[in-house]
Length: 595
Image 1 (cartoon, rainbow, N blue to C red):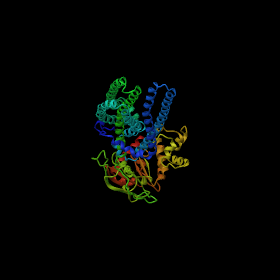
Image 2 (image 1 turned 180 degrees about the vertical axis):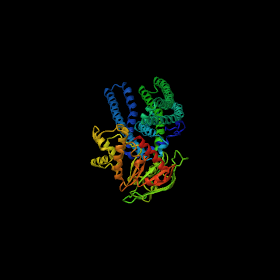
Image 3 (image 1 turned 120 degrees about the horizontal axis):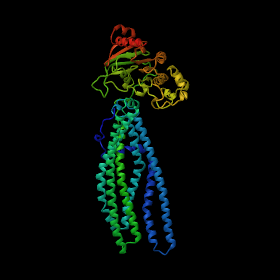
Image 4 (image 1 turned 90 degrees about the vertical axis):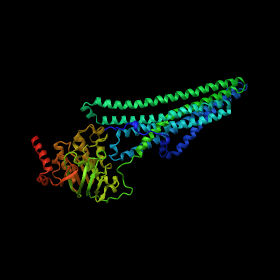
């Protein structure tokens, strides 16, 4: 489901303190920052010296010394070359710094998100997370790689320009400074509104990305139910909300530019008028007036640039807040600070001790209600029952995607909450109900179970999963690219690759959640034989609706409404004439009728 949170209701940035959160990512590159500042100061100083050279050139027209005039021109040309070199160096250093920092931020956010438990993704859409990693980091890149350096340069130009204007003409400088308060007031007032609208705009963009991601990942279902128009409408509505927020932000930003530029250049014209009268009165030379006007233009340009950068910083502050939210997000499932250690050889003994669990989004319904069971090492146990009985929940709790509300789950006597998640998960192989196939080759998909496996081991696992024949028939065999989510494969082929992946993992605990549900009868028999062989010496849990696949299990647990209502072999459960016998009669009778 899409995130229903209205971005208008979310907190907005009140100040630039969020940008301080970027410092830990910038701190490792202090040398690069220092070099960038040196280049920045150099270009600012050269820019401030240029008007002095221009003044010399202008006043030099009145001198009869031709060599002196030439030297002024050559000095001005040298300064221009130095300015060009410094500007290029500043651009390279600052842009490189921005790209490096943003790459580190993206990696840090992704590393944080990839480790979050499923309960986290019940509250936020994957598309929104992706939007923050891409769109929000692009804003930060713009600030670090451009806006901040431009802001610092313009601050230097502003301060230096005012100081040199004072040396040129204190009278005219005083007139210019009268305009400054008039310029600062709209920057501060409108800047607050810009900050809020920038955050709102980014939130709507993330909402739009989440909506699009959800629809595109389910495109076949959308088309099958002829819901294209409804999906277009939903996406269009969210996108229009994003545009509306952007439109209001742009309007205020444009108004800010109009006000600032109008005030600044009105002031410059007025000062120029006063300066022209001083030239006529021989109070100052033409060169001094030109020098002062250039400094005034540089100063005014700096103020105008700072007003524009102000809006960019507002947007970056909002984007940083959103990324920091992800980096600081608290997971309901955490590794212990001092984790216990599993024995070197994991036997695979599993026990549930009075476990009760509610999904975070359904707190009123117990998915498991006081479940207690012990599974011995090497035992094959099937879990059956009607839909919603709690079968898949057992798998999710065993992998510690969630923690039980009460009770304990143990592996070889160790409470899973006392273990590091990666430490015990490496001893578990999973075949999920909906097999996950990555946009890679078939070989890489199988090798995902054990990245260090050889090609021979990959093919052996594929043979055991009855996948070798169809993989060999693909255009490039095992090295065929199978498309996003395995779009080039059938449902049964995807499931056999997932089974091969689990076989390759060679773990002491096997979890199979409807592992053969998408297979035809012949493939199911082949895979079932492979699973039976693989289960020897391993603890195996098989979740199944099709009871024919679990008849050989050492033990069958029958679940109903989150409780274990029966426990025994196929024969004993049929003899009890309870829920299992009823399910068996329905399935086997239907199967015989179908034949």
